[in-house]
Length: 294
Length: 201
Image (cartoon, rainbow over all chains, first blue to last red; front, side, top):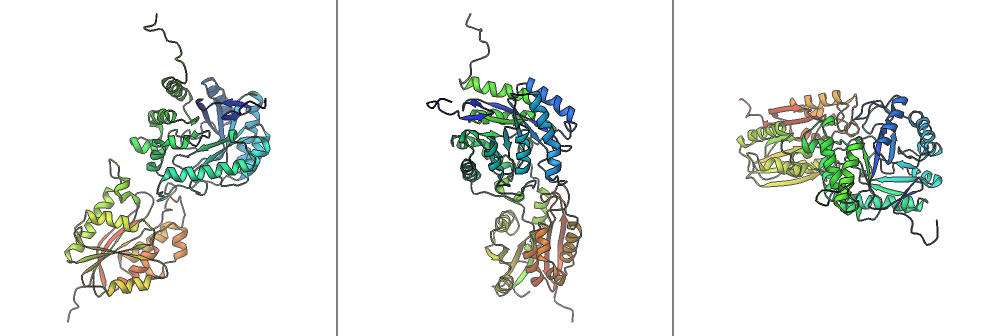
């Protein structure tokens, strides 16, 4: 990079992105029991086929996860590695340019997947393993910092309260991001995520959505993981499989307020919502306008 | 029981607070039982309500929300925080107070009753809660006093301090209202106890 060039706002696998770019991160679960897809991509070949599908649908990156977020059977480091590491290697081999994220909080898994070609460590549990950022720095990987209020991984919120959930998220994310930078991860590879529903009830997630612009104002790449979550279901009284429309509404509002990365199950629909918001905001030209102009 | 005219126990989920209201009240049944238990208290004609709850828990706010819509809504309310160290002092203060006090205590059983419960599943929860409910419903003050604080904490049961208070104020009372259920994987109990009527000659 020429010395007089500004580093990009966000950098993943050597590619630069601007604050007005909106990236779709496709969820690829390597679990038998995640809440939404419930083992759909548990068989490796099916998961591999799903990667082809989401790439075709316009995903900018994929997020591979080996452990469901909810409480349940303990999955140790060895089992988590077994579920994700060979798969990362296989995807990396087949897609040399695809940005690969892995959803893990553990530094041992982080090391193994970075070794196998992962570009981003998506820690959904707020830095529960303090060594994860060191691994990201060592491998030149990006890292996601999440606000969880310090809860133990794979626990549910129980009577959690905040004086101001947005203030709490801002404080936590700024501190975690500073820690990642101090460990050697450059700012353009530090992503923040308020972690809707993690250590939070629906009111908290809704308030974070309503005031997402305050997180965007931190000037750091911002990721939101909204897809089919309980706060959407509780807002509309809809079960897990009927939350896509509510999720897309939330996506549009989050996009309007300045989030960059959207972690989703429904790639094609999300791509349309994000492009529509970009066009409305004047950050993207309409695809092809002729009406009234001929 | 001296000046205490009635004792009531209610759970303290945040669901009961107006700040977390939904279009459909998920706690409608619980709320109705709380009001029914307090209607029993009103029948005993108290002049004031004293709420005992753990310091820095939602207990006082939940009690205030429930009282506001209850048969006791017009009575003055006094809040007494309690800690593990101050149980006896707090009970002494309540029993020595002016006559006509309705005592309201907040607390819950285990939040680890099944895989979907907030605290997930602990196989000890069912038996623990069964013993708690038996001791409350009887009432059996000695059994309440014997409940283990450490086990309660491990099982994410928020009622231990409240049960210790009840162990000291329930001797010579009878259960006038009782309801227990776990609609959300947390053991709730709602009860009112009244002093025994004057002993027969």
